Image (cartoon, rainbow, N blue to C red; front, side, top):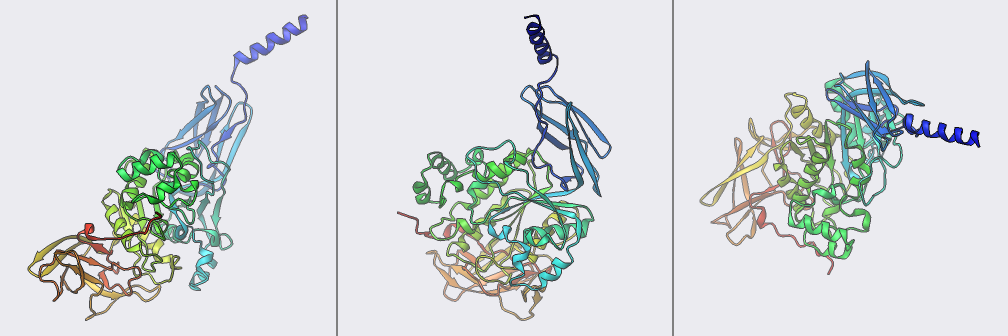
Length: 504
């Protein structure tokens, strides 16, 4: 009896004298060979025993922290300088320790979207033999990729469902990397000489909705209605909703992939994000209306989740190899979404290729890198082609003004992977002009320095102009003299009509 009482007392003493013992866990995003963002505080987090004291050590820093009563702990490293020398990240608890090996500090970016972002370097070789040489030369030990494949979830996860792998870029591994992200990252590393990391959360065949945080479906009536119908899991009503989404199943409902792939890592700081998506919001029975509002919700939703209100966000406009009747309308929606501060759009209308997956992701990634180099790294590089700014109506002429038109506009063609070549004496094509009834007519267009003048003998009182509004416009000719193509545009987007033939 005395022994039993003594044992009970000892157990009570142990229970009140220190933290409860639990397995030490570091959030799953922290794995060997990872890259953390330089020049900003970096949070490390995980779980341990309630009240357990922990020590985090990295790059000469030592931070002591204590898990809360529920076992959650975090520690914040002071800003780190970029380094190509991998170092261990130590997390020491009271009974066990964890070591994350070969961690670099550099530039870290999110890459997300659907299959054109997911399309890997190896797949590019099926049409572009030049990529095989890039694979053979891809010995970049400070360029690393992390691919996250988690399935959709109804609510945001605190941690990734399983540990992803951080893969060092070598000729043996690069074929599995996103082509867009690889050429983006390679360009950054060549220009900056710092480690570059990519976290790829893309998934083929997905509309934009599952990547938008559920809390962001509040900025427009269509988004609010989508959230309401999604909460009821009324997929049929979502498909019939003007501006809604053709959710093949519940996996594509609002926030489902954000919850599983992005919510668990929002505390990890990054420099910015690149995005390539839109095909699954503009295909058969898919409604591209209000996509601009969805893009704004995506950007602002990520920024709020990251507590990073000016997170750079650069996205790809759908290419000219259109695969659906809704593509021209969606391209215009993407252009309209560029009004969000600290965003940029890459025009790909001139990139050769057929079908929904043009193989040339080289130009795409490098054009995305131009935006980052110019806006986030202070380099003096041209980053955008001509973007429509305003129109002036003068009798039967409309004079168009553009941003990014300096020193002047030009007519050019882009042969394959080569840089665009100016074609002196070449004609501008793909311009149309609208009459007072909103009917569109083929038009003649001429360059006047940084402006374009548009007219048609069939239209005496014009009201609007549109450019390259076609599923697959051939040989789009309008560039600035930096060799970057003009975005398709409509000076009065409200005139654009499109019936997606939604399910009845």
